[in-house]
View 1 (cartoon, rainbow, N blue to C red):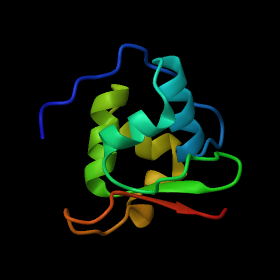
View 2 (cartoon, one colour):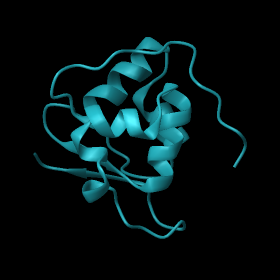
View 3 (cartoon, one colour):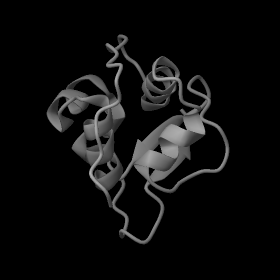
Length: 104
């Protein structure tokens, strides 16, 4: 994988924000479609993220990519986004999808 650079626009976090919401806002702030941002994180669901309808779970690899793209450390992301904490990170082989949607 080529080196990822932080997106030009960093955004703050909303209280009790879901991963899906954060990713939607990060994509929008940087002029990207959500599908384009998800592709940068890895493989996963084909359907668009609906922040109010589902939570988006990430693998460790996708979380690391999000850290690079967002300009935030993994530790920072884990402090504010509940579903990237260690107990929620997907345990998947590198050959499998990095993203998963789940009903709230």
